[in-house]
Length: 275
Image 1 (spheres, rainbow, N blue to C red):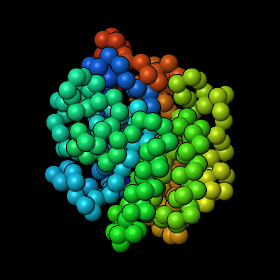
Image 2 (cartoon, one colour):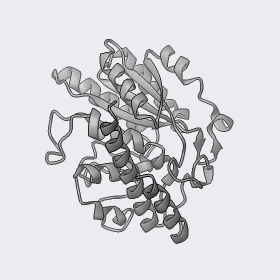
Image 3 (cartoon, one colour):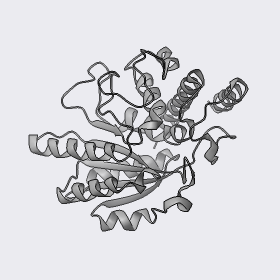
């Protein structure tokens, strides 16, 4: 990746992180940790990888994105605002009464949201349906979905994986946000889903392992995914929960807690210092 593109993506990812913090701080609740861990992936998806148009949210031939780990909606809202689907100023209405930015994505209320999610395991299932629909309709759009590593403890996730392989959904890209932490602690201590690569391969996927915070690795992973034919692709992104905010990084306590005023100011200053 050329340095100018990498610098621009880093700037976008930082703005996404600032949007996440603004939203969760204003709401006084939400899920900052897992939102921050996918900020770099979201920046690449919406500004490099996916075929989308903010002026036409319902464009029939757009690529689809499903945030299966719907509790990290602040990351999705922040990238949609950055892309121009709605004004960034709306982010601070997160979880407010009558806001179109609820605690989990709602496809009927929020421009750019392709699927209502939140109940873990349902998002990847819906993404499989979208990918199969494209095949049936002879459309060339691709479907992308992010699942959490804690979410992968859900049996429905693996049923969806069997479905994707059975129907040879090579237009589907499943991303695993492997940050190692979930609401109750370390994923490995609660219900260890690893090794992801061998399990997903056994379920019929082409598997790519990548660093969730390295734009060169992200670019290479998606480029490879586009070449895979006859089977779905899974990109297992090793990430850092709370990435970009030193006191949140790798801390399970920041799974679902909003920063107070002092913490918010410190976090914003840290991110702005890198821009």
